Length: 234
Image (tube, rainbow, N blue to C red; front, side, top):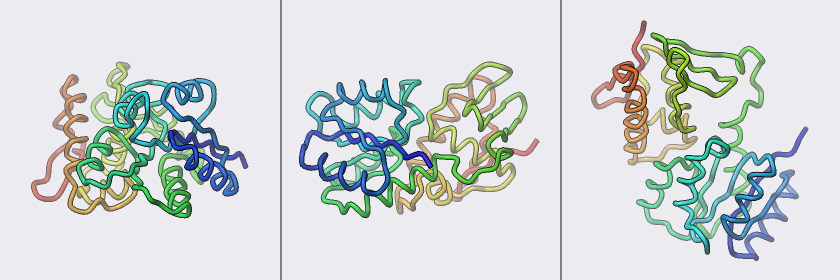
């Protein structure tokens, strides 16, 4: 079985050495970078399955780097876990809204990092899916979501979505007519319960609706007041 490739971006050499050693011994293929410039070269030349991104970096702060990677077609679907010494709640919210898949605060245990990496890769990967599941697609009023190509189109026009927007739309379309609570969306898309901060779901729904509105499809995602969201039935 091929190893998952993890890129660690951190300007603290001792952390890079520690994480490289421990992730390697846990079966990962590890790449390291001390700045975004180095990271960009690795991302351009290697197939990376996940990025551990520190917020405090010398050439570009982690939040700006996260936004940059989410806007780049080559890197927008790569899972990213933010790593920081800042524990403030607002930093976590901003990171999640920009498209981070998880958030780890220093100091952390290696066991915790390995567990979170495995959880994010499982959520974002296709391990254990059958060929039928991988090839599955959902359609509604000219809107088509293709899981295999990870694309969304409306009458052959490509709709550019972030990874999180795609996953939310997929989950809603898969459960047409069923109400998905904000808590369920957080748990299924972000992989853990971000208690008390369900507004990150509302933000992603708002962005998703804005993109669908260009094709008159924003009302396909219905708001169920005080509960969550539902994708309309045919």
